[in-house]
Amino acid sequence: MAFPAAPTESGAAKIHFLTTDGNSAAGWFGVTEGSTGTGSNTVGFAAVATHVEGDAVAAPGGLNTTATDVPVVLVAGDDGTNAVPLQLSGSDLKITLDSEAVVLGAGTAEIGKLAAGTAAIGKLAANSGVDIGDVTLTTGANTIGEVTIGAATGAAGDLAKAEDAVHGSGDIGVMALAVRNDALAALAGADGDYAPTQVNAEGAVYVRPAVSPTGGCKMFTSVDLDQTEEDPTAGPTTIYGIYAWNLTAAPLWLQMFNTNTVTVGTTAPTNNFLIPANADSDGAGVVLPVPVCGLAYSTALTVAITTGSGTNNGAPGAGDAGIAILYQD
Image 1: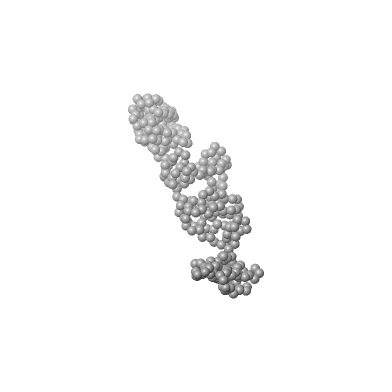
Image 2 (image 1 turned 90 degrees about the vertical axis):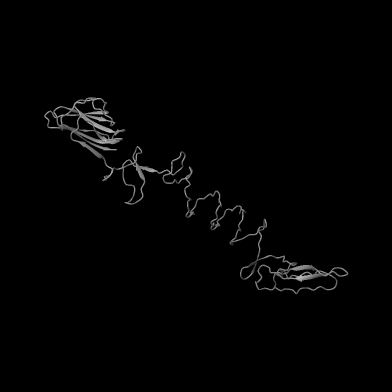
């Protein structure tokens, strides 16, 4: 690019214009007011060259940055080799930034709308109090990545609940689903794998009693039970098994009371059970049927054996009858 020499003032006050060489000349002119004389003001001239797009970075010229002279051609910078201008779109004269990072300073200004496209926002840095708002995740192969869920607040709408928290009406949670399996079978591949809870056709959860050295039934035994009552328990009791025997030739009666306040012969028994005899005094016994769920006595358990039913207090002989009871209290 041929850069013309700056014109000089001559004769009367006048303005000189920088000539161009086709479209390749680069230049700038400024008008400055000269000193005031007795006649007309003189006009001075400042010629400062600027770059145009495509100029080499080291080409002659530059920007005059004095207080009175400013360039009329804006240069955005260079790409390492050539000068690069600021570009405006053709329709609404907006500056277009392409593939460059834009730093938004701190403040309350909003970005506005992110138009549809394939560009990524990048990383959203931590900023307390900033709410992204409603975000619609479109279908596709993109993944959100790792998301940290905040601590449970205990509110009714919180999916997470704290241990030992009190239940409240309207609490929201995630339902634990079970699999109906009418013919119970393993649904996991191997021991130690995750597996769902299974229910039968009635919706009951499958369970299996397991043998344990603790937590089983207790046993009460009396080998000489008669009209004098005995108290196996003093509180609520569930009976799971009853076996009674009779060594006399005549039937006897087992009386059971749902209380410890008993007068045999006066207090009506809660239950009466016949203990059959063998007629020859060789001994007989009976195992009383008890449902799987047990026989409940809500207050306590007292037992006696008499020669008659109801409020009878007939006394068997010493050692003629006895009982064994399986229970939990």
